[in-house]
Length: 190
Ligand code: GRF
Image (cartoon, rainbow, N blue to C red; front, side, top):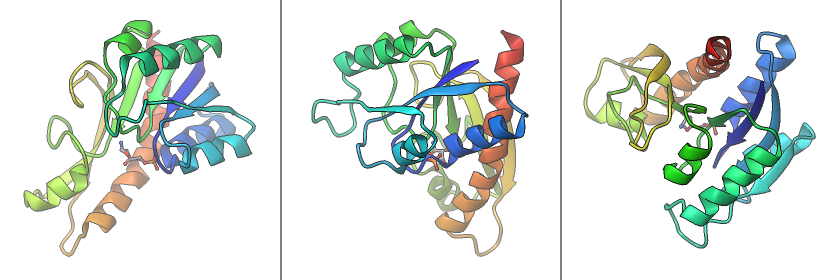
């Protein structure tokens, strides 16, 4: 299974996928890593592994993923032979042009037990709401924000004294196990 990864930040989830490949628990290869942020550490991690990288030119828009940029992204993913696209901390909403290029083949990881707490900084949302648990979810991407069909999810308790940082760190430990497992589950279903 040839994977393409889109990320805006640290890339620890991409690293977890690479680690699962190295450990032989996931039969896949990451062919291309793209970021909308030229300084994102995810690109550094990929380069260190000799993986092809690229920057998505979002034409100066801060949060929008412009249609031309989505078309370019789809072309680059196709040219690299990508079969499944993994969003890993990618901070822009993917819409029609890219969804149409990879129907039911784009996955995302979200740090909450969806449908609870969609959107940004959901670990903060969970704390502010006084929730007793949160978690993480891997789901297929559709046109909504964190709304697509769920592939795997796991809960993480909110502990007394948790801060946004401690809760997010504990959720990330579970994410790193869940994302490779979800990719393997999708692969088996194809
Ligand atoms: C993760 O918590 C993920 O759930 C969210 O963004 C964060 C990305 O972390 N979508 P990383 O870049 O994989 O380290």
